[in-house]
Length: 127
Image 1: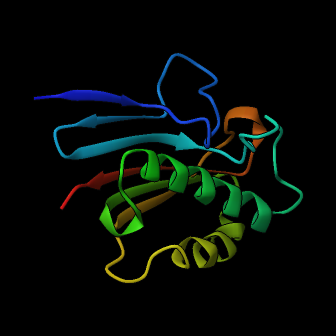
Image 2: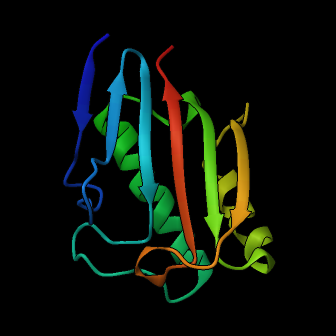
């Protein structure tokens, strides 16, 4: 099975020993994304709304680099540091999908890289 590394300057460069995504066959595995602005390298986290939108923009850029979009996402994992913010995060997240939402879990964690509040990873499959 083929394995292609996906990295785009339109999403944050990895901050560790990993790639933005790996395309294996027709399945794209996207590493967890946080609210780093790829243009500046700075966090966009003045509030949870801005933070969540930036995470989704980063995921979108990686999907596009692989020739895919949110309609092909089959699974997501959302990590948050405060379950009280779930409603806001969930509302923003949902706006990026037209229909047929992917399978998902959301878990609260003690901390995330760079001490952000939300990190999302995805799996997408080419039709």
